[in-house]
Length: 247
Picture 1 (cartoon, rainbow, N blue to C red):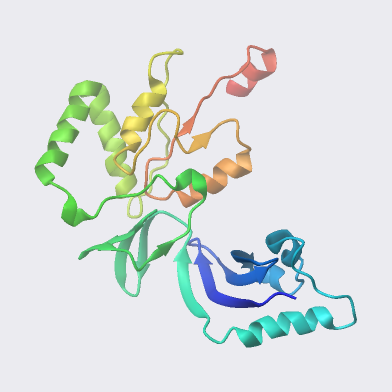
Picture 2: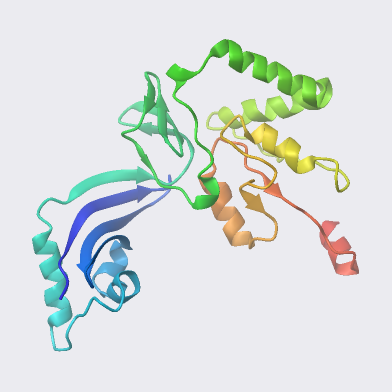
């Protein structure tokens, strides 16, 4: 009882493997909706209820699910096919090196908005401006203010991390940086200011958190390629087990 068509066939590439998603436009219960469905879940049609709600009905009967699935595909005559990238940083596309960010990609000729980048919400702040709109003198002055604020020793160390992240595709680092200090010494603010070379952050919007599961943090760190990725708020308990874990 609902018209639906696949308007996009999207190949999402995370740098290691690709997964296919269908963008489906449907009208159910008098409301038009656009939903994304993994291709691996499409044929089951279990997404109909969860994505479109109770207004979308597939009648019971042998073979009706297959007919509905096939009908949607037959009606999708103008499906657009494209590739989207699910990571940040450097990527070679059609022989050209691009630097991917949440707003698209930066190429040799400048900003490219025709490159699709699909990132988890935690990485959405990694968005860079159009290089053509950047005043190099203002940018250089901002770097000098950063060094002045941080002090020579700490400032140059933090700035070197920014440089290392940018060239990590060529020279992968084999270490992490640890900002240590007591509560209230602006550790998160220092991390956020350093991350601002790659987007817009403050102490409350850093992408990683040690309260997240190890798998979730690892997945974010994998997608956050060639940028500063901060995992914030390490606050161990005072128990003996916590001390043993630190050691």
